[in-house]
Image (spheres, rainbow, N blue to C red):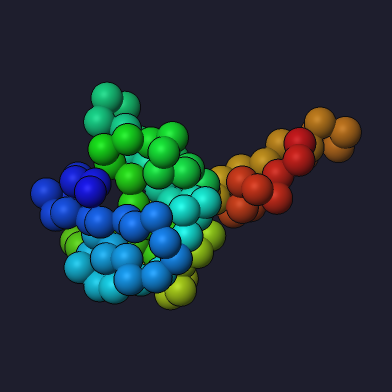
Length: 111
């Protein structure tokens, strides 16, 4: 059982079915699935984290903030909104060209 930052409870099973997500909806989360991890000290969300590597404030992919309706991370989000800020999208600096590209998925930035 994982307690989400909003005070709700999220249960993530070790099987690939019947998992209850932090939003209270039923979803499927495999044991090796990544999600987002909220750090209470820095107040930052990191994407692509296994639940076992996060601890208390882990959220499955497609988890939406109840106030904004935005997913923590663009990867795995089923409803992308232009008004949302995703924690796995940012700037990418390419050393060979010395150029910065914006709105790049962090997994696509090879520098």
